[in-house]
Length: 557
Image (tube, rainbow, N blue to C red; front, side):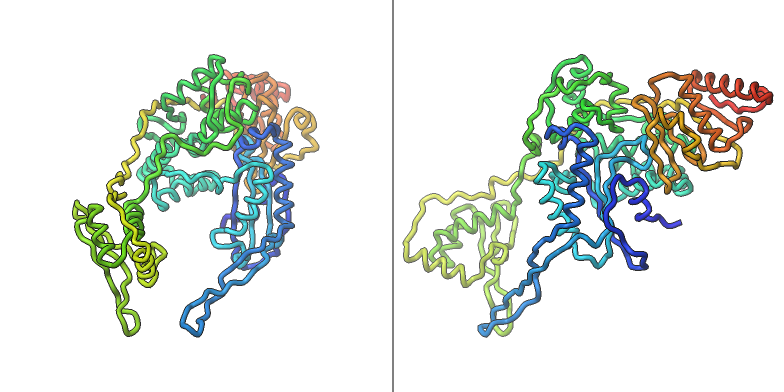
Protein backbone atom coordinates (compact mmCIF):
# COMPACT_ATOMS: atom_id res chain seq x y z
CA UNK A 1 0.00 0.00 0.00
CA UNK A 2 1.36 3.41 -0.97
CA UNK A 3 2.23 5.65 1.97
CA UNK A 4 -0.31 8.47 2.37
CA UNK A 5 1.40 11.64 3.62
CA UNK A 6 -1.94 13.46 3.97
CA UNK A 7 -3.24 10.76 6.31
CA UNK A 8 0.00 10.99 8.31
CA UNK A 9 -0.34 14.77 8.67
CA UNK A 10 -3.96 14.57 9.84
CA UNK A 11 -3.56 11.43 11.94
CA UNK A 12 -1.97 12.85 15.10
CA UNK A 13 -2.10 16.61 14.52
CA UNK A 14 -2.69 18.96 17.45
CA UNK A 15 -4.00 21.67 15.11
CA UNK A 16 -5.01 21.64 11.43
CA UNK A 17 -5.69 24.55 9.09
CA UNK A 18 -6.90 24.57 5.50
CA UNK A 19 -7.59 21.60 3.28
CA UNK A 20 -6.85 20.18 -0.14
CA UNK A 21 -9.52 18.85 -2.51
CA UNK A 22 -9.17 15.24 -3.63
CA UNK A 23 -7.17 15.29 -6.85
CA UNK A 24 -4.81 13.18 -8.89
CA UNK A 25 -2.37 16.08 -9.14
CA UNK A 26 1.02 15.70 -7.48
CA UNK A 27 1.31 17.13 -3.98
CA UNK A 28 4.43 18.62 -2.40
CA UNK A 29 5.29 18.26 1.28
CA UNK A 30 7.43 20.51 3.48
CA UNK A 31 8.00 20.15 7.21
CA UNK A 32 10.07 22.07 9.74
CA UNK A 33 10.60 21.96 13.49
CA UNK A 34 11.75 24.18 16.37
CA UNK A 35 13.95 22.89 19.19
CA UNK A 36 12.02 23.35 22.46
CA UNK A 37 15.20 24.78 24.02
CA UNK A 38 14.58 28.06 22.14
CA UNK A 39 11.27 28.45 23.94
CA UNK A 40 12.77 27.54 27.31
CA UNK A 41 15.54 30.10 26.78
CA UNK A 42 12.81 32.71 26.36
CA UNK A 43 11.02 31.69 29.55
CA UNK A 44 8.33 29.56 27.86
CA UNK A 45 8.62 26.35 29.84
CA UNK A 46 5.35 24.44 29.36
CA UNK A 47 4.13 22.44 26.38
CA UNK A 48 0.79 24.24 26.57
CA UNK A 49 2.44 27.67 26.12
CA UNK A 50 4.59 26.36 23.27
CA UNK A 51 1.45 25.00 21.58
CA UNK A 52 -0.21 28.43 21.75
CA UNK A 53 2.73 30.11 20.01
CA UNK A 54 3.07 27.44 17.32
CA UNK A 55 -0.65 27.60 16.50
CA UNK A 56 -0.44 31.42 16.38
CA UNK A 57 2.38 31.14 13.86
CA UNK A 58 0.37 28.80 11.63
CA UNK A 59 -2.64 31.09 11.74
CA UNK A 60 -0.46 34.07 10.81
CA UNK A 61 1.11 32.17 7.91
CA UNK A 62 -2.36 31.38 6.52
CA UNK A 63 -3.20 35.12 6.46
CA UNK A 64 0.21 36.35 5.29
CA UNK A 65 0.80 38.02 1.93
CA UNK A 66 4.44 38.17 0.90
CA UNK A 67 5.53 40.72 -1.67
CA UNK A 68 8.35 39.29 -3.81
CA UNK A 69 10.36 40.43 -6.82
CA UNK A 70 10.82 37.85 -9.58
CA UNK A 71 12.77 37.81 -12.83
CA UNK A 72 10.51 38.19 -15.85
CA UNK A 73 12.62 37.75 -18.95
CA UNK A 74 15.04 40.22 -20.56
CA UNK A 75 15.00 42.91 -23.24
CA UNK A 76 17.73 44.51 -25.36
CA UNK A 77 18.28 48.26 -25.41
CA UNK A 78 19.14 50.17 -28.60
CA UNK A 79 22.81 50.23 -27.56
CA UNK A 80 22.80 46.41 -27.40
CA UNK A 81 22.80 46.15 -23.60
CA UNK A 82 20.73 43.24 -22.22
CA UNK A 83 18.51 44.30 -19.31
CA UNK A 84 16.75 41.99 -16.87
CA UNK A 85 13.02 42.53 -16.43
CA UNK A 86 11.38 42.07 -13.01
CA UNK A 87 7.82 41.83 -11.79
CA UNK A 88 6.29 41.99 -8.32
CA UNK A 89 4.14 39.11 -7.10
CA UNK A 90 1.95 38.71 -4.02
CA UNK A 91 2.49 35.24 -2.54
CA UNK A 92 -0.27 33.77 -0.37
CA UNK A 93 -0.18 30.63 1.77
CA UNK A 94 -3.88 29.99 2.31
CA UNK A 95 -4.31 27.37 -0.39
CA UNK A 96 -2.66 24.49 1.43
CA UNK A 97 -3.14 21.97 4.22
CA UNK A 98 -1.11 22.90 7.30
CA UNK A 99 -0.79 21.04 10.58
CA UNK A 100 0.99 21.42 13.90
CA UNK A 101 2.34 18.30 15.63
CA UNK A 102 3.62 18.18 19.19
CA UNK A 103 3.95 14.41 19.47
CA UNK A 104 5.08 11.36 17.54
CA UNK A 105 2.33 9.06 16.24
CA UNK A 106 3.60 6.64 18.89
CA UNK A 107 3.17 9.01 21.83
CA UNK A 108 5.78 7.07 23.83
CA UNK A 109 8.40 8.68 21.58
CA UNK A 110 9.25 12.38 21.74
CA UNK A 111 9.57 15.03 19.05
CA UNK A 112 10.24 18.74 18.85
CA UNK A 113 7.19 20.88 17.97
CA UNK A 114 6.90 20.93 14.18
CA UNK A 115 4.78 21.95 11.19
CA UNK A 116 3.68 20.07 8.08
CA UNK A 117 2.70 21.89 4.88
CA UNK A 118 1.03 20.03 2.01
CA UNK A 119 0.16 21.79 -1.24
CA UNK A 120 -0.28 21.39 -4.98
CA UNK A 121 3.07 21.05 -6.75
CA UNK A 122 2.19 24.10 -8.87
CA UNK A 123 1.83 26.35 -5.80
CA UNK A 124 4.15 29.37 -5.79
CA UNK A 125 6.28 28.84 -2.71
CA UNK A 126 9.63 29.59 -4.39
CA UNK A 127 12.57 27.40 -5.30
CA UNK A 128 13.45 25.10 -2.40
CA UNK A 129 10.38 26.55 -0.57
CA UNK A 130 12.13 29.94 -0.48
CA UNK A 131 8.98 32.07 -0.03
CA UNK A 132 7.46 29.75 2.56
CA UNK A 133 10.71 29.78 4.52
CA UNK A 134 10.82 33.59 4.35
CA UNK A 135 7.30 33.80 5.78
CA UNK A 136 8.29 31.41 8.57
CA UNK A 137 11.43 33.46 9.31
CA UNK A 138 9.32 36.59 9.75
CA UNK A 139 7.15 34.79 12.30
CA UNK A 140 10.15 33.20 14.04
CA UNK A 141 11.71 36.61 14.69
CA UNK A 142 8.58 37.72 16.53
CA UNK A 143 9.16 35.01 19.15
CA UNK A 144 12.98 34.86 19.04
CA UNK A 145 13.05 31.23 17.89
CA UNK A 146 14.61 29.38 14.97
CA UNK A 147 13.17 26.76 12.66
CA UNK A 148 15.61 23.99 11.81
CA UNK A 149 16.30 25.38 8.31
CA UNK A 150 17.48 28.62 9.99
CA UNK A 151 20.13 26.80 12.03
CA UNK A 152 23.78 27.00 11.14
CA UNK A 153 24.43 24.33 8.52
CA UNK A 154 26.48 21.47 9.91
CA UNK A 155 29.25 19.64 8.13
CA UNK A 156 28.06 16.05 8.31
CA UNK A 157 31.10 14.58 6.58
CA UNK A 158 28.71 12.86 4.17
CA UNK A 159 27.60 13.37 0.59
CA UNK A 160 23.94 14.07 -0.20
CA UNK A 161 23.53 10.48 -1.33
CA UNK A 162 25.05 9.11 1.88
CA UNK A 163 22.94 11.43 4.04
CA UNK A 164 19.78 10.36 2.20
CA UNK A 165 20.54 6.73 3.09
CA UNK A 166 20.35 7.51 6.82
CA UNK A 167 17.20 9.60 6.35
CA UNK A 168 15.60 6.81 4.30
CA UNK A 169 16.34 4.27 7.04
CA UNK A 170 14.87 6.57 9.71
CA UNK A 171 11.73 7.17 7.63
CA UNK A 172 11.31 3.44 6.91
CA UNK A 173 11.59 2.56 10.60
CA UNK A 174 9.11 5.26 11.58
CA UNK A 175 6.56 4.21 8.96
CA UNK A 176 6.58 0.75 10.46
CA UNK A 177 6.07 -1.33 7.29
CA UNK A 178 6.90 -4.72 8.82
CA UNK A 179 7.80 -6.55 5.60
CA UNK A 180 10.08 -3.77 4.32
CA UNK A 181 11.79 -3.37 7.72
CA UNK A 182 12.36 -7.12 7.91
CA UNK A 183 14.01 -7.16 4.46
CA UNK A 184 16.25 -4.21 5.44
CA UNK A 185 17.14 -5.62 8.88
CA UNK A 186 18.13 -9.01 7.47
CA UNK A 187 20.35 -7.39 4.82
CA UNK A 188 23.43 -7.32 7.07
CA UNK A 189 25.70 -5.56 4.61
CA UNK A 190 23.24 -2.79 3.75
CA UNK A 191 22.25 -2.01 7.35
CA UNK A 192 25.89 -2.12 8.52
CA UNK A 193 26.91 0.36 5.81
CA UNK A 194 24.09 2.73 6.80
CA UNK A 195 25.03 2.51 10.48
CA UNK A 196 28.64 3.31 9.53
CA UNK A 197 27.35 6.47 7.83
CA UNK A 198 25.29 7.33 10.93
CA UNK A 199 28.42 7.11 13.05
CA UNK A 200 30.34 9.39 10.68
CA UNK A 201 27.43 11.84 10.88
CA UNK A 202 27.65 11.84 14.68
CA UNK A 203 31.44 12.24 14.74
CA UNK A 204 31.15 15.35 12.59
CA UNK A 205 28.03 16.94 14.07
CA UNK A 206 27.97 15.69 17.68
CA UNK A 207 24.20 15.48 17.17
CA UNK A 208 23.52 12.93 19.88
CA UNK A 209 19.76 13.51 19.60
CA UNK A 210 19.61 12.36 15.96
CA UNK A 211 22.05 9.50 16.59
CA UNK A 212 20.06 8.03 19.49
CA UNK A 213 16.73 8.72 17.77
CA UNK A 214 17.66 6.48 14.82
CA UNK A 215 19.16 3.74 17.02
CA UNK A 216 16.15 3.82 19.38
CA UNK A 217 13.58 3.20 16.67
CA UNK A 218 15.84 0.53 15.14
CA UNK A 219 16.08 -1.15 18.56
CA UNK A 220 12.27 -1.03 18.88
CA UNK A 221 11.72 -2.59 15.44
CA UNK A 222 14.32 -5.33 16.03
CA UNK A 223 12.60 -6.19 19.32
CA UNK A 224 9.18 -6.31 17.65
CA UNK A 225 10.48 -8.58 14.89
CA UNK A 226 12.71 -10.56 17.28
CA UNK A 227 15.73 -10.05 15.02
CA UNK A 228 19.24 -9.98 16.50
CA UNK A 229 21.60 -7.61 14.74
CA UNK A 230 25.25 -7.44 15.75
CA UNK A 231 27.01 -4.16 14.99
CA UNK A 232 30.55 -3.64 16.27
CA UNK A 233 30.12 -6.25 19.01
CA UNK A 234 26.78 -4.80 20.15
CA UNK A 235 23.42 -6.51 19.67
CA UNK A 236 21.16 -3.62 18.68
CA UNK A 237 18.04 -5.62 19.54
CA UNK A 238 19.10 -5.59 23.20
CA UNK A 239 21.26 -2.47 23.51
CA UNK A 240 21.60 1.18 22.59
CA UNK A 241 25.02 2.81 22.48
CA UNK A 242 26.26 6.38 22.27
CA UNK A 243 29.54 8.28 22.47
CA UNK A 244 30.73 11.17 24.62
CA UNK A 245 33.86 13.28 24.51
CA UNK A 246 35.69 14.28 27.72
CA UNK A 247 33.90 17.63 28.00
CA UNK A 248 30.47 16.03 27.71
CA UNK A 249 31.36 13.23 30.11
CA UNK A 250 32.66 15.69 32.74
CA UNK A 251 29.55 17.86 32.39
CA UNK A 252 27.16 14.93 32.87
CA UNK A 253 29.17 13.64 35.84
CA UNK A 254 29.01 17.08 37.46
CA UNK A 255 25.23 17.23 36.96
CA UNK A 256 24.87 13.71 38.38
CA UNK A 257 26.69 14.91 41.50
CA UNK A 258 24.39 17.91 41.86
CA UNK A 259 26.91 20.53 40.74
CA UNK A 260 26.21 23.58 38.56
CA UNK A 261 27.56 23.59 35.00
CA UNK A 262 27.73 26.00 32.10
CA UNK A 263 26.00 24.87 28.93
CA UNK A 264 26.22 26.14 25.36
CA UNK A 265 22.92 26.06 23.48
CA UNK A 266 24.70 25.73 20.14
CA UNK A 267 25.53 22.15 21.21
CA UNK A 268 22.83 19.50 20.84
CA UNK A 269 23.56 17.63 24.08
CA UNK A 270 23.42 20.89 26.06
CA UNK A 271 20.00 21.64 24.55
CA UNK A 272 18.78 18.17 25.51
CA UNK A 273 19.99 18.75 29.08
CA UNK A 274 18.12 22.06 29.26
CA UNK A 275 14.93 20.39 28.04
CA UNK A 276 15.35 17.56 30.56
CA UNK A 277 15.77 20.07 33.40
CA UNK A 278 12.40 21.58 32.47
CA UNK A 279 10.64 18.19 32.26
CA UNK A 280 10.67 17.94 28.45
CA UNK A 281 11.48 14.32 27.72
CA UNK A 282 13.58 13.19 24.76
CA UNK A 283 14.79 9.87 23.40
CA UNK A 284 18.39 10.98 23.85
CA UNK A 285 18.05 11.93 27.52
CA UNK A 286 16.08 8.77 28.32
CA UNK A 287 19.12 6.78 27.22
CA UNK A 288 21.81 9.09 28.61
CA UNK A 289 20.00 9.29 31.97
CA UNK A 290 20.27 5.52 32.31
CA UNK A 291 24.05 5.87 32.44
CA UNK A 292 24.11 9.16 34.35
CA UNK A 293 21.52 9.48 37.11
CA UNK A 294 19.82 12.73 36.15
CA UNK A 295 16.36 12.08 37.57
CA UNK A 296 16.57 15.08 39.89
CA UNK A 297 18.16 17.48 37.38
CA UNK A 298 17.25 21.07 38.28
CA UNK A 299 17.23 24.19 36.06
CA UNK A 300 19.23 25.85 38.86
CA UNK A 301 22.17 23.61 37.94
CA UNK A 302 22.45 25.21 34.50
CA UNK A 303 24.14 28.46 33.52
CA UNK A 304 23.78 29.64 29.94
CA UNK A 305 23.56 32.73 27.81
CA UNK A 306 20.05 33.91 26.92
CA UNK A 307 21.49 35.26 23.67
CA UNK A 308 21.66 33.13 20.55
CA UNK A 309 25.02 31.38 20.30
CA UNK A 310 25.77 29.54 17.09
CA UNK A 311 29.51 29.94 17.36
CA UNK A 312 31.76 26.93 17.38
CA UNK A 313 35.20 27.42 18.88
CA UNK A 314 36.50 24.46 16.87
CA UNK A 315 35.44 25.97 13.54
CA UNK A 316 37.88 28.20 11.66
CA UNK A 317 36.63 30.02 8.60
CA UNK A 318 38.97 29.27 5.72
CA UNK A 319 39.09 31.58 2.72
CA UNK A 320 39.41 29.68 -0.55
CA UNK A 321 42.66 29.80 -2.56
CA UNK A 322 40.91 31.44 -5.54
CA UNK A 323 39.44 34.18 -3.34
CA UNK A 324 42.87 35.01 -1.92
CA UNK A 325 44.27 35.28 -5.44
CA UNK A 326 41.37 37.56 -6.43
CA UNK A 327 42.29 39.78 -3.47
CA UNK A 328 45.82 40.04 -4.90
CA UNK A 329 44.48 40.84 -8.38
CA UNK A 330 42.32 43.67 -7.02
CA UNK A 331 45.14 45.00 -4.82
CA UNK A 332 47.53 45.14 -7.78
CA UNK A 333 44.88 46.70 -10.03
CA UNK A 334 44.38 49.50 -7.49
CA UNK A 335 47.91 50.80 -8.40
CA UNK A 336 48.36 49.58 -11.99
CA UNK A 337 48.59 52.28 -14.69
CA UNK A 338 48.62 49.85 -17.63
CA UNK A 339 48.21 46.20 -18.48
CA UNK A 340 52.01 45.73 -18.30
CA UNK A 341 52.12 47.55 -14.97
CA UNK A 342 49.41 45.24 -13.58
CA UNK A 343 51.46 42.19 -14.53
CA UNK A 344 54.67 43.68 -13.09
CA UNK A 345 53.04 44.43 -9.72
CA UNK A 346 51.73 40.85 -9.54
CA UNK A 347 55.26 39.56 -10.22
CA UNK A 348 56.52 41.78 -7.38
CA UNK A 349 53.89 40.15 -5.20
CA UNK A 350 55.49 36.77 -5.83
CA UNK A 351 53.69 35.36 -8.87
CA UNK A 352 56.04 33.67 -11.36
CA UNK A 353 54.00 34.32 -14.49
CA UNK A 354 51.00 36.46 -15.44
CA UNK A 355 49.05 36.51 -18.72
CA UNK A 356 45.84 38.06 -19.99
CA UNK A 357 43.48 35.71 -21.82
CA UNK A 358 41.05 36.58 -24.56
CA UNK A 359 38.16 34.82 -26.26
CA UNK A 360 36.29 35.40 -29.47
CA UNK A 361 32.86 37.00 -29.18
CA UNK A 362 30.91 37.74 -32.39
CA UNK A 363 33.51 38.91 -34.91
CA UNK A 364 36.21 40.21 -32.52
CA UNK A 365 38.40 38.96 -29.72
CA UNK A 366 37.85 40.33 -26.20
CA UNK A 367 40.10 40.07 -23.15
CA UNK A 368 38.07 38.08 -20.62
CA UNK A 369 40.39 36.59 -17.98
CA UNK A 370 43.77 36.66 -16.27
CA UNK A 371 45.97 33.64 -15.52
CA UNK A 372 48.61 33.63 -12.78
CA UNK A 373 51.23 31.03 -11.83
CA UNK A 374 52.44 30.81 -8.22
CA UNK A 375 55.95 29.97 -6.98
CA UNK A 376 54.84 26.36 -6.55
CA UNK A 377 53.79 26.30 -10.24
CA UNK A 378 50.08 26.32 -9.45
CA UNK A 379 48.26 27.87 -12.41
CA UNK A 380 44.95 29.63 -11.74
CA UNK A 381 42.70 31.36 -14.27
CA UNK A 382 40.29 34.01 -12.98
CA UNK A 383 37.58 35.30 -15.36
CA UNK A 384 37.03 39.05 -15.04
CA UNK A 385 33.32 38.52 -14.40
CA UNK A 386 34.22 36.59 -11.23
CA UNK A 387 35.52 39.90 -9.86
CA UNK A 388 32.49 41.83 -11.18
CA UNK A 389 34.74 43.39 -13.85
CA UNK A 390 35.21 43.46 -17.62
CA UNK A 391 38.26 44.69 -19.54
CA UNK A 392 36.59 48.01 -20.30
CA UNK A 393 36.20 48.69 -16.57
CA UNK A 394 39.78 47.54 -15.94
CA UNK A 395 41.09 49.97 -18.56
CA UNK A 396 39.08 52.77 -16.95
CA UNK A 397 40.63 51.98 -13.53
CA UNK A 398 44.14 52.03 -15.03
CA UNK A 399 43.54 55.42 -16.68
CA UNK A 400 42.29 56.79 -13.37
CA UNK A 401 45.40 55.47 -11.56
CA UNK A 402 47.62 57.13 -14.19
CA UNK A 403 46.03 60.50 -13.50
CA UNK A 404 46.47 60.09 -9.74
CA UNK A 405 50.02 58.77 -10.19
CA UNK A 406 49.70 56.40 -7.22
CA UNK A 407 52.80 54.46 -6.12
CA UNK A 408 53.48 51.79 -3.50
CA UNK A 409 56.82 50.42 -2.34
CA UNK A 410 55.86 47.04 -0.91
CA UNK A 411 53.38 44.69 -2.53
CA UNK A 412 52.35 41.90 -0.13
CA UNK A 413 50.36 38.98 -1.44
CA UNK A 414 47.46 37.15 0.16
CA UNK A 415 47.77 33.69 -1.37
CA UNK A 416 50.65 32.77 0.94
CA UNK A 417 48.15 33.04 3.81
CA UNK A 418 46.21 30.09 2.41
CA UNK A 419 46.04 27.04 4.61
CA UNK A 420 44.65 23.87 3.17
CA UNK A 421 41.47 22.68 4.80
CA UNK A 422 42.55 19.87 7.05
CA UNK A 423 40.42 16.83 7.54
CA UNK A 424 38.63 17.26 10.83
CA UNK A 425 40.44 15.51 13.64
CA UNK A 426 37.78 13.76 15.64
CA UNK A 427 37.97 13.89 19.41
CA UNK A 428 38.53 10.71 21.37
CA UNK A 429 35.06 9.39 22.14
CA UNK A 430 34.11 6.98 24.88
CA UNK A 431 31.45 4.42 24.04
CA UNK A 432 28.56 3.81 26.44
CA UNK A 433 26.24 0.82 26.08
CA UNK A 434 22.76 0.83 27.62
CA UNK A 435 20.76 -2.38 27.89
CA UNK A 436 17.20 -1.92 26.65
CA UNK A 437 15.18 -4.35 28.72
CA UNK A 438 11.76 -5.40 27.54
CA UNK A 439 9.69 -4.88 30.69
CA UNK A 440 6.53 -6.67 29.63
CA UNK A 441 4.93 -7.58 26.33
CA UNK A 442 1.50 -9.19 26.01
CA UNK A 443 0.34 -10.56 22.67
CA UNK A 444 -2.14 -13.11 21.44
CA UNK A 445 -2.24 -16.02 19.05
CA UNK A 446 -5.94 -15.26 18.63
CA UNK A 447 -7.10 -13.54 15.44
CA UNK A 448 -9.68 -11.56 17.40
CA UNK A 449 -8.41 -7.96 17.53
CA UNK A 450 -11.22 -5.54 18.26
CA UNK A 451 -11.02 -1.78 18.42
CA UNK A 452 -11.38 -0.68 22.03
CA UNK A 453 -14.50 1.24 22.90
CA UNK A 454 -13.12 4.06 25.04
CA UNK A 455 -16.49 4.41 26.80
CA UNK A 456 -15.89 1.01 28.40
CA UNK A 457 -12.51 2.17 29.51
CA UNK A 458 -13.55 4.75 32.11
CA UNK A 459 -11.23 3.65 34.91
CA UNK A 460 -8.15 3.64 32.73
CA UNK A 461 -9.19 6.86 30.99
CA UNK A 462 -9.20 8.58 34.38
CA UNK A 463 -5.70 7.37 35.18
CA UNK A 464 -4.04 7.77 31.79
CA UNK A 465 -3.62 10.37 29.08
CA UNK A 466 -4.70 8.52 25.94
CA UNK A 467 -3.28 9.32 22.49
CA UNK A 468 -4.36 7.36 19.44
CA UNK A 469 -3.17 7.02 15.87
CA UNK A 470 -5.81 5.63 13.53
CA UNK A 471 -3.37 5.42 10.63
CA UNK A 472 -0.72 3.45 12.51
CA UNK A 473 -3.25 1.59 14.72
CA UNK A 474 -1.44 2.57 17.90
CA UNK A 475 -2.86 3.80 21.20
CA UNK A 476 -0.57 5.07 23.94
CA UNK A 477 -1.62 5.27 27.60
CA UNK A 478 0.56 7.56 29.67
CA UNK A 479 0.97 8.93 33.15
CA UNK A 480 3.99 10.84 34.40
CA UNK A 481 5.78 7.59 35.24
CA UNK A 482 4.10 4.92 33.10
CA UNK A 483 3.75 4.37 29.34
CA UNK A 484 1.80 1.50 27.77
CA UNK A 485 1.68 1.19 23.97
CA UNK A 486 -1.13 -0.84 22.42
CA UNK A 487 -0.88 -1.84 18.76
CA UNK A 488 -2.83 -4.32 16.67
CA UNK A 489 -0.55 -7.18 17.63
CA UNK A 490 0.89 -6.38 21.06
CA UNK A 491 0.63 -4.42 24.31
CA UNK A 492 4.05 -3.25 25.50
CA UNK A 493 5.08 -1.58 28.74
CA UNK A 494 7.60 1.08 27.63
CA UNK A 495 8.08 2.93 30.92
CA UNK A 496 7.39 1.99 34.53
CA UNK A 497 8.13 3.71 37.83
CA UNK A 498 5.02 3.01 39.92
CA UNK A 499 2.85 0.13 41.20
CA UNK A 500 3.72 -3.02 39.28
CA UNK A 501 0.51 -4.89 40.23
CA UNK A 502 -1.80 -2.10 39.02
CA UNK A 503 0.19 -1.48 35.85
CA UNK A 504 0.14 -5.15 34.81
CA UNK A 505 -3.56 -5.33 35.69
CA UNK A 506 -4.23 -2.38 33.35
CA UNK A 507 -2.36 -4.12 30.52
CA UNK A 508 -4.44 -7.27 30.94
CA UNK A 509 -7.61 -5.13 30.99
CA UNK A 510 -6.55 -3.67 27.64
CA UNK A 511 -6.02 -7.19 26.25
CA UNK A 512 -9.51 -8.24 27.37
CA UNK A 513 -11.09 -5.10 25.91
CA UNK A 514 -9.35 -5.88 22.61
CA UNK A 515 -11.23 -9.17 22.59
CA UNK A 516 -8.21 -11.33 23.34
CA UNK A 517 -9.01 -14.49 25.25
CA UNK A 518 -6.97 -15.06 28.42
CA UNK A 519 -6.35 -18.57 27.09
CA UNK A 520 -4.61 -17.16 24.01
CA UNK A 521 -2.28 -14.70 25.74
CA UNK A 522 1.48 -14.93 25.35
CA UNK A 523 3.79 -12.86 27.55
CA UNK A 524 7.48 -12.01 27.54
CA UNK A 525 9.77 -9.64 29.41
CA UNK A 526 11.79 -9.45 32.61
CA UNK A 527 11.34 -12.19 35.19
CA UNK A 528 9.62 -9.98 37.77
CA UNK A 529 7.03 -8.59 35.36
CA UNK A 530 6.34 -11.98 33.77
CA UNK A 531 5.78 -13.48 37.22
CA UNK A 532 3.25 -10.78 38.18
CA UNK A 533 1.44 -11.16 34.83
CA UNK A 534 1.40 -14.96 35.22
CA UNK A 535 -0.16 -14.72 38.67
CA UNK A 536 -2.80 -12.19 37.61
CA UNK A 537 -3.85 -14.17 34.55
CA UNK A 538 -3.99 -17.33 36.68
CA UNK A 539 -6.26 -15.62 39.22
CA UNK A 540 -8.59 -14.38 36.48
CA UNK A 541 -8.77 -17.80 34.86
CA UNK A 542 -9.39 -19.43 38.22
CA UNK A 543 -12.21 -17.01 38.96
CA UNK A 544 -13.70 -17.91 35.58
CA UNK A 545 -13.29 -21.60 36.44
CA UNK A 546 -11.02 -21.97 33.42
CA UNK A 547 -7.88 -23.98 32.94
CA UNK A 548 -4.85 -23.25 35.05
CA UNK A 549 -2.27 -20.90 33.64
CA UNK A 550 0.29 -23.64 33.15
CA UNK A 551 -1.92 -25.13 30.47
CA UNK A 552 -3.24 -21.97 28.91
CA UNK A 553 -0.69 -19.16 28.88
CA UNK A 554 2.60 -19.24 27.04
CA UNK A 555 5.40 -17.64 29.06
CA UNK A 556 8.60 -16.43 27.40
CA UNK A 557 11.38 -15.10 29.65
